[in-house]
Length: 114
Length: 115
Image 1 (tube, rainbow over the protein chains, first blue to last red):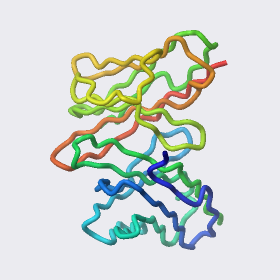
Image 2: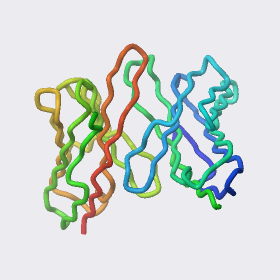
Image 3: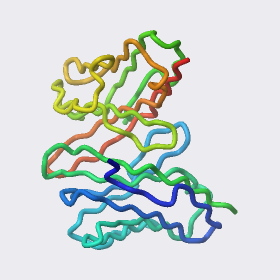
Image 4: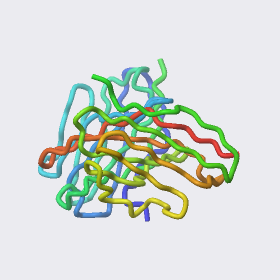
């Protein structure tokens, strides 16, 4: 059972455009939602994260939008750059249970073309 | 500050052979994770350590996989014997859990190919 569903699987965006990646979750106990960025040959690195007590979090060109009632959250990359080309993973965790186990989506391969 | 260090970076073995992966976490991080990442998929947790204790190994295939974290620092993950389906990238991550804050830092991984 996939607990975090991510879409699209791949995304091609023109330089300067907006990249949008969506995730949906099923477990209502999830209370921590990070996004990880992974370049080829590297491990995932935390990009930005949100907790369900806020609907939006912005850090530079990266914004997470969170809809608790719909159990959905999304990553928006403004003014996308070729250097943003990577695979992006959404994840969710139930920190209240003390496990901190991250459940990852399947990833979105983003290609930003000049 | 050095990040999470994993070795080897690549390993090619024949099926039924044993293999071991090593992880050195970020200094001071009390929690260590081993993940498996299949091609085109997100990482999946295999085992989590808090200090030297394995507190979550429910997803570790215990018939062939084993792990240890001696003295609560470095860790090794072993597969014996390896099967074709074990081909994947094995990622190690570490974190310092303080309250509800838990940022996991990942190593570059070990890419295992079983022939």
